[in-house]
Image (cartoon, rainbow, N blue to C red; front, side):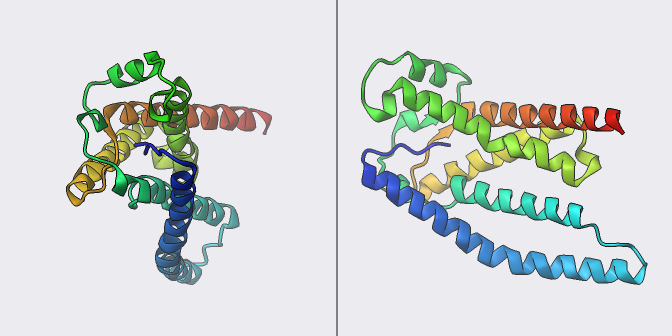
Length: 204
């Protein structure tokens, strides 16, 4: 899921593009979201159901998270357009690629141990909020199996989208390890959510 850069200018360009993508997606989705929520509240108001500020805040946070996730993983980045197609950018063997990356001793940015660790931790952190926010906005997702299923399906969907984007000369890395790491991140997020909720309920 990561994109390798070869210069400071490329990294700056990526940051600017991600920020632009977030603003663009927010400008498109937020008005639609606001209209939908307004319609729902109007309907609830007729049924005398009170508005929950806490729940609306959680839903808004979840939407913003999805926007940021899409901007980072799906929207085209300048760096990905300058990359060349490579067999190493397609990995369908679990764990092997990450182990090889960590075992390399070269000093180049894409091959460095530091880069590999950042990529691993970044993929874990990417889905950590999913494990926290998803059960927070809906009790139907308050189960380990459901978080696991959503994380796997969501991450696979991203990787498939990135694989398809390679046909449009947007050469992002497609790596099965990203699915594993994303899923681990979501599970860790859910564990933290469950622990906090357990202690919060114990105190009430």
